[in-house]
Image 1 (cartoon, helix red, strand yellow):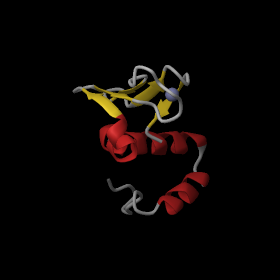
Image 2 (cartoon, protein in one colour):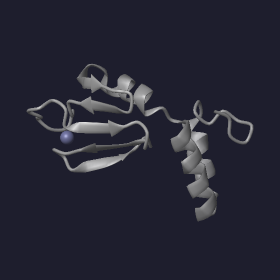
Image 3 (cartoon, helix red, strand yellow):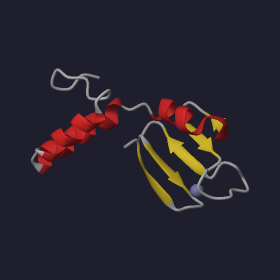
Length: 96
Ligand SMILES: [Zn+2]
């Protein structure tokens, strides 16, 4: 992904300082672009690897690392919408 002619992914500090200079609307568009560029499947595999208990086309079910899950699949990642939610922790978010 190339934004403004520079590689943002390889220079996260530069990307953050750039965001600080933006108007709220510019910042929103900027983060939207970043969210689209992030592959939640790749991110989950890198961060959660062996905790992924089920992998479907549109979703991943994960044994949440933040609480003691009995089912081992309480953390659900929706790959189409780019969001995740843990029913045990009652917390969710996106790739950022
Ligand atoms: Zn949890």
